[in-house]
Length: 567
Image (cartoon, rainbow, N blue to C red; front, side):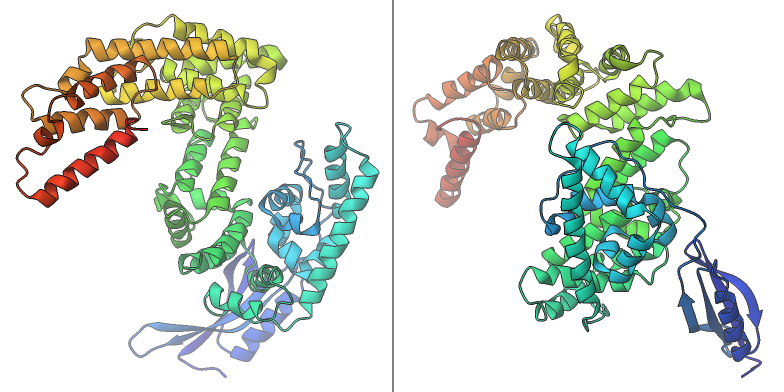
């Protein structure tokens, strides 16, 4: 089978990627070499690619042999000991849900990184599930850990809980084994087409999702790398227009993002702080992928996040960012002196218009990180960390939002006095220039102060305290309206009545002021205009088309309702 125009490249798989092992002129010899390599049980896979030289100097590649296999065990694998209590699954179907799969991903991370298998594949591919069940004491250890965590606060008996979990696992195993014997379609085209096919094979409507995941798991198991699985899933999701199908694919992409592939997606990052910020960029679809090691897959993933098509995967990335923030690893390893600057950078990235981007969880993660930057431990260390986090916020308005979210977090109840004590700084401030950072536009200052007011009023603090703080911020805003003549500038006497009225009402409807004295001052100015004789007639002056005049009035009345008038 030798030819002057053909050569045969023997490749072996290493860490999920194909690399060249040798180049042979004869096809039979190349295939024989590949098969010999597979006899070594540490070999992940071997394949032969024919390179055919065209007359124009280009090459045509064709795979003529390929086989992958499980590598030989290299010793016992242990579960990752999680500390937080997992949500309790009452029935087998609960175990297929996102929270349960996320816990599975963490518990079996050591095993999954070696086997390149996702929780979805474990639960839907009987062969993979059986391998896990036969692997040392992994499964019993995981069950014991979960049962202990779910009953440690007196919520039942751990032995009874173990038996409940094993019963569900037996039912899941039986379901996977039954599906393993079914002649299901292959995933050769769109996911939705396959889903429609398996729906016609399902005994009941709820079984269609399970069978679709069985088909997808069979397809993914051949990709023996996280990068390969991600590329396949992103390609399917990018081409998918059906909402339910996309939801199912999102769940498995979330599984993959629970692995170390995130490091490959992000590429080189100069510090953990930069990596955390990049993760958040990716979750929002703003990631610059030029440093990524996965190229097209990273671009597809970024696009899917930007289009808000992967909510479960987004949650996994956010959770990962919070876990990294809480971890003992330094934010800037190469220079300990830059640790605080790195923290300030992360704080800036984790703040949005309403305060900490993801509420109490972000506030708690930031505080936990700062406890690693102080010498004191325990409750005293957290007290110092709370004070420093408050001081690091860009301004007092953001500080108020941080404190409100922290009070609602897991560490809030223990530190209520510390948290409430910092509000004294806000009560001693009488100017918006002290409440909000300099450089903001007047509109942005009012929006930020109002966001702080909103956070305080929806917090769990005592009602008297909320009213005191809320009234204080309202007074600051009212004073700002007066000093800067905000209302007068909107209601400029040289402007037409219609322009003045619309500007004022849009201002009240824009959410830049809370309900209170400041808002009432703006509304009083509007009411003064509305009470003018023949307001409607004056409002449409200059509009000669009767239809356009009526539309202008209708639109204005709709705007009035949005601004709190006529309710």
